[in-house]
Amino acid sequence: MNYKYNILFIFSFILMVASCEKDDDTTSIQVPENDRTEQQAIDNDSLIVYLNTHYYNSSLVNSLENPTMEDLIISELLDGETLPTNTSLLINDVQTMITTYLEVEYVYYILKIKQGDGEYSPNFTDAIRVSYNGFLSDGTVFAQSAFQQPIELTSTIQGWNRVFPQFNVSNSFTSNVDGTVSFEGSGMGAMFLPSGLSYFSTYKSGIPTYSNLMYKFELLQAESRDHDLDNIPSHMEISQSNDSDLLIDTDEDLFLNFLDSDDDGDGTATASEIKIDTYSDMTLEGLQTILDAVELMSNQFISPISTLPDGTFTANIITLVDDNGNGIPNYLDVTESDTIE
Ligand SMILES: [Ca+2]
Ligand SMILES: [Ca+2]
Ligand SMILES: [Ca+2]
Ligand SMILES: [Ca+2]
Image (tube, rainbow, N blue to C red):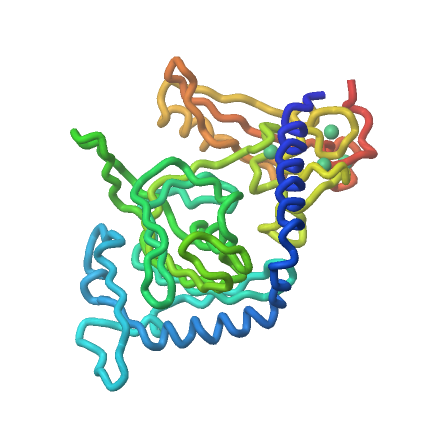
């Protein structure tokens, strides 16, 4: 059995405990955390006021083939001011989204300017590359970033791992002589998040506690993640009842499934309890043709295509074997003993 990833998780857990202890030292100057349901009601009222009193340059930005964050201008409609021509109030164009987090129902809003021309849409556990501009409801910019290193959606605020899966990535990029990279066809828009899907009671530099956060962004690239390298992508290591809940720990050993190389704790690694068939080709198109010809059964999926050092393209077809036919695949079935070697 491979303990490597469990150890990693233990290490981060210790760090977390250590930081909690540090926080405990300062409880005398901390105020109790606001009730999440009450705070959500306050935040949503504020967001609706914001969306009713701010407009954007809809005619221009929606006419562009490749709109960027800089092209999207959001302005406040002042008291008594008439809505300028060629603009729209945000409230008329945003999509209203509902999600549950920590048993509280949250409402957030998306302004979708461009879906994105790439075929791929990220999972909520992916690493993504984005350009973004984060601002508060008074317009104060607290963060902006051009293309940078991948960001793990498992480590970001809850709003991000809900919004970005609703966009597609870019479909091409070019490397410029000055070392920068230009992307074309990126998903582009803005999100308006309640504090409960942002930093909530946590103070961050430039962000007061319980702040609603707004971001303009371009979704450039994304990559599927398998954090524990057990060949089950992280976005599939979820509870059955909630499709974005990673807090499942089948064997109750305190290592969440997406960080546990032996999910059912039967002593056999998950990677040894599933069937892995590898397909390779020298060209991406060739591999795609091979994969397209496979008729997948309901207990099969294709892993993300990767490139080997020799330039070969490769992907696995994973079969979630269920030898005893009880509906629980071997890797999650602690009663399944026939594959242990
Ligand atoms: Ca995994
Ligand atoms: Ca576990
Ligand atoms: Ca196992
Ligand atoms: Ca089974």
